[in-house]
Amino acid sequence: MNKALLPIVTISTFIVLIWYSFSIVLNSSWALDKAERNDQKLSFSELVHDTWSQKKPKLPAPHQVGYEMYKTIFDKKVTSKRSLVYHGWITLSATLAGFMLGTLLGILLALAIVHDKATDLSVMPWIITSQTIPILALAPMIIVVLSSIGFTGLLPKAVISMYLSFFPIVVGMVKGLRSPDLLEIDQMKTWSASQFQILIKLRLPKSIPFLFTSLKLGMAASLVGAIVGELPSGAIAGLGARMLSGSYYGQTIQIWSALFTAAILAASLVGLISIIQAFVFKRMMIVQ
Amino acid sequence: MTDETVISAKSLDLTFQTNDGPVHALKDVNLDISKGDFISFIGPSGCGKTTFLRVMADLDQPTDGTITINGISPKAARESRAYGYVFQSAGLYPWRTIGKNIRLPLEIMGISKSEQKERVEKVLKLVELEDFEKKFPWQLSGGMQQRASIARALAFDADILLMDEPFGALDEIVRDYLNEQLLKLWHSTEKTICFVTHSIPEAVYLSTKIVVMSPRPGRIIDIIESDLPDKRPLEIRDTKEFIDIPQRVREGLRAGHSYE
Image (tube, rainbow over all chains, first blue to last red; front, top):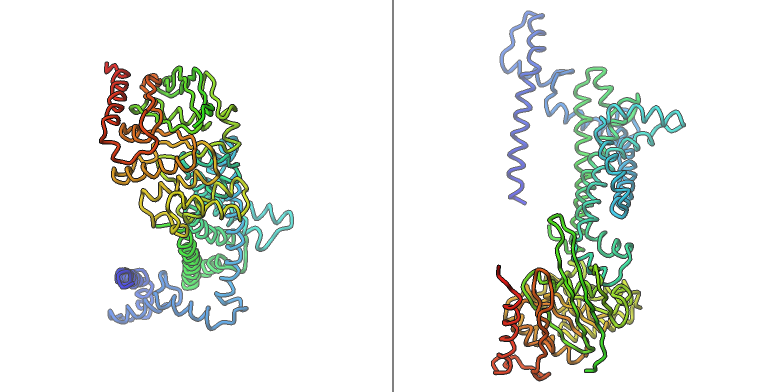
């Protein structure tokens, strides 16, 4: 524990220091302009103080973001439109829905690809192509198409989220399901095992380590997908909407708060998967 | 031991089509194996001994000739679970205990839970691993893992045991011990065993018949009937009768090699 703590604290301190310095550098022109208009001369400490406490800074200082997050997470009622918990929940629900859909789709596709040569040859290129299209270009169209057939709100975002998250699952699971070596497959053959039995007794257990790696990637991708889905839709709720409205009104502190909330959310979700993974690996005697 | 033939190969041929051209793995192989025989296949790498075993197990298909197991095709024999196959590596699943690993083929074959339990206990006793049912593979030594894999091959009570260099990866001391155990097991179960090896003493010590094979193309060059007594303590390897047989095996192996 201590071994891990020291490097983490060192790096974090380093990042915060750099951040504060850049706040001074980036926000100083505004502070100096203002001082000049008022015929004032700023001392260095006054300049630093000003750059760290502007209302619409180019780069808000860490404590400003921290305070904004504290205010909008703990001080606001969770039902309030200004609560980050409210917006976080909107994004989280779309993320989880998209993640589940993506995982399901990914596993089903992987099963089909591993068991059917024709699917392998015909579907795999499309799966790869799907990820070369910029999601920012595709997201508005998914929203338009789905809303024209009556789906709005959570579902379009979940679909965009799924679009990003199924890919790591497919790739990981195909690799995992194919990870049994020739000897293990031959062994199964000597027992006249059916394809289904080979899947249940051998392929699936062997794919578990691959699955967890994919789930972590998929979860992070899901969150990105949900946020991207909130940007073009004119959504008024969600972390993406929060970022967008922040950028309309130059509310940089609001943007950074939403950004950090999203990062913390992603880290927690990935961390949760890691905990489940540790538990499953222990049960299955998988050594990492 | 009776004269009932369980495995019969007639002018068996197998050619693999590889990217470097055809490889003649088996050429005109003829062999009859009687019930209760302990047959060793010996020869240098590439002589087709493993391929022959795989053909018996229906893991590879001959390109010409016929082979029958218990009078039926290898495929039908495999589907009726006529043989147990032991590979060079134990191939135990790390997420299953030893007991559960042995159950695996029984689960696949749809044998009832109560009978599974009974059989696992029985075969664990046969390979002297009674106390290890609840242990995981990593808690066992290499030799013990290989014994567990033999137990797994015995669990569904097939009459034929096909073993592909099962002790090849083990050190000599463990190998001696396992050879002795295998002979004991063969005596007590009266199974027909086909055993691939590249160790001459191992082949001579274990077998009733030694099949000497030669590469390019893989073929049988000599079949040596062993006149050693059925009961064989390890010390038998120092007697004159024992020393004569390896001599003949070596001659056979040398004759098969043209070294050109």
